[in-house]
Length: 511
Image (cartoon, rainbow, N blue to C red):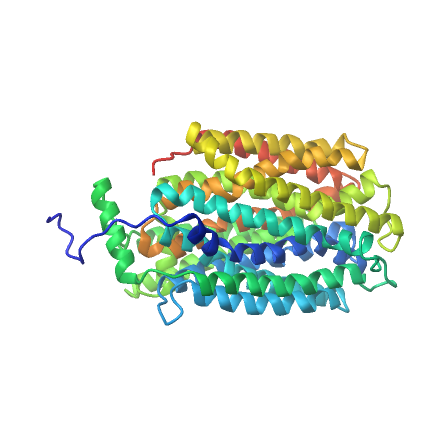
């Protein structure tokens, strides 16, 4: 057979058994232990160490900024790695070691600045493991199994988060471990939870490393060429699309936006909101980065990692561009929830504002239970969504799930009984299960195998950028417009998630 492809004999990627998919996804149990402990407890740690309510989003901003830098780099590197441990698994191992150490140190932070720095390190470490896991599904599974592959990851994410989020509650109410501490110290219930999380993170990732295999680059290329023949399309993703003029123009545009925005904030509006400065300074730096890439292109140095990643960013497949907009509003809502659920529930529903009080810590523990519930329901719904997607389609499932999740988030404003929040968490869990599976299942079918890692990393720009945006503007809104009432941040998040659901209608799902 001669279709102009001069490579090894093409093969169809074999289907894997249920237990093979189970083993290759098991590491996400540990990864989500780290994320769940971070999401449920970091705002609590910051408040305990003296952070003001409107400053909490700025302390969180380290996490998405880290992801913005780490994810595409790790994806790019993992695409080009092959050694005795494999292609993606070396990054699984490195991230697990670093994240486990960070989880041991984080709850012992003596100062607020130290805790913020540990969040930076912890999030970077988690991303080193997590992003190659996303690409791993695309590497190992044929198209017809990718939905179940990402749903299996969703199952382990939900399961891990249920246990990790509820650990402080279990420590306090079942084991009698202290839930309060002297001023400026983290309670033992939180510390011991992080210690357990560090051990589980490492052991779960090691299970995947030991029990799973990887295809060699030669095998992956053969599978990729087979799929391209079946679909009668090219897989040459190495064509260079960017021009010096285009990059120079785009670089100047973002540079000017950053300069004008920063100038207006400082000299005209005289605002001291650090988060808004982060947005405009980020725009300025992005502009400078594109000007640097344009210079490298002019000098014909197009083989550098920076140029190749930038080229891939501008040459995203159509479905990826459409999903990027959906991801932006979905993750803006999620970040609003993660930042503000603890202060919203403790202040708006429990009526507690003193982080040292027993009532506040009861509310904070209840937030852990709420997060366990939505993650547990997500674990159950992960497989239900696979069945629903087969009966309808992935777009319909994702749209409905996001709209229900948005309504559930807004309901926090109207509910006064903490127990009733459990119902809202079911809707959020449905949205979370869909967010973790459907966009990636849609995306993986449109990506070239040899660039699965870098494109998964780039795709996460649209997870990270909304988080930076949320961290930048929500603190300003809560402080200046909503009088410090965090509950209104959850309402904004709910509206954003509903908008994301409506935007799913614009996505092309052609696998």
